[in-house]
Image 1: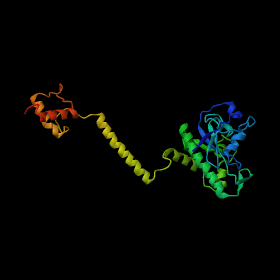
Image 2: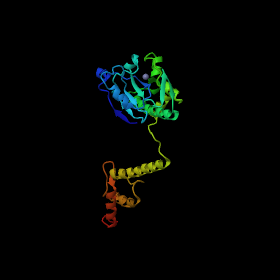
Image 3: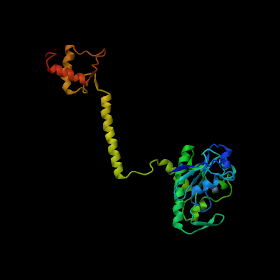
Image 4: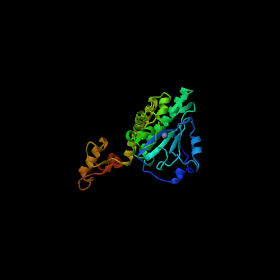
Amino acid sequence: MQIVKSILTNNPCYKAGRKISVKGLMLHSVGCPQPSARVFVQSWNGPNYNSACVHAFIDANTGVVYQTLPWDHRGWHGGGSSNNTHIGVEMCEPSVIKYTGGSSFTCSDKAKAQECVKRTYDSAVELFAMLCTMFNLNPMRDIVSHKEGYALGIATNHGDPEHLWRGVGLNYTMDSFRADVKKKMENKEDEPMTNDERKKFNALVDAVGTLTKKVDKLEHKMIYSWVDENMPDWAVATVTKLKKKGYLQGDKQGKLNLDDNMLRMLVINDRAGIYGE
Ligand SMILES: [Zn+2]
């Protein structure tokens, strides 16, 4: 998901400068056949545009998110009390539809319309997953559409965006949307690995494991305190002899504290006859 920051600094809503504590997310769709988010960014970023302002537009041609207000800024998107609690995001709509009144429209190219709508839906899922994580929201409880907001008494009487999904013949619902956001939040691995990639990845994990063991051995030298099964076979006779002769006595508890290099030195000297028979 690509987010382009395009804050509407000239919109009176931005200038009002009020902040909210984000309690939920409201999904909208623009309600006119304009797929380009840039067109909205340009026309809404003026001092005379004093009736609406949202936090983001999702472009229907590219799926790119244009962030138009800081996320915790109070927006003018839902009407009613939802403006005090909810982030509002508009999905742009395909150019191949034509409104005939209210939320009814005709469509001249169903395949193209569905492609656009699917694109904004998928981006909205990603964006809402990110925002739920950012504001510690529960996607199943804290996401509503503008239409649902009206039913809850927190927004004005609009039918978006469900009217668009239904109108282009897609079986999206707000329940499917919430479930998809939840799934996105749980599934952090965006694109699952192919079998070949998985094999390579596992080989890499094994190689790192082997290296780690080697480094660990180098950093933490084995210390031999006793003549036991840990001591290498080739050193046992020499060490036993040196203990018997009293050359090796260890510390107060009798711990020898010998590392590998010392064992090798002692064995070499022993072979050279330095410690006698
Ligand atoms: Zn709306």
